[in-house]
Image (tube, rainbow, N blue to C red):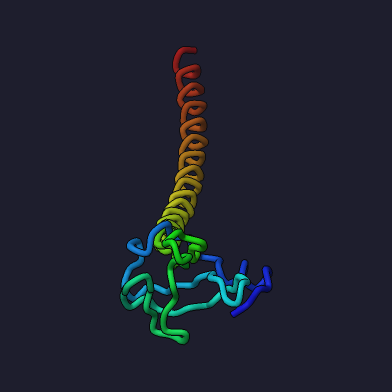
Length: 147
């Protein structure tokens, strides 16, 4: 449990706030901010197990957190802020790794093709030079024959 904002920011990297406890998935890590003794505290939580009557049960201590605090009239006076692992971030990381592998493969292909183009360019230049020499020889022979 903490009120240190720097600690809380670091702990919530890779997490997103959920609007409803029904958005939680079993086995996903849950962190939350709730009220205790009139002050808000951050809890590092644990893995989500299940929901109960106005509670979320976790595989950690404390093993549950109250979702809403109500007054005697039933009015909600406080709602716990719940955070869970960001699935999009996991997907992005998987996609990123896949894209990096693709890029590495493409880079190797580009390097191989560049080397082949360079070698072919040398061969083409040599053939061009030979062709130029042969054209000059043929031109000389034609000139000598026409004389």
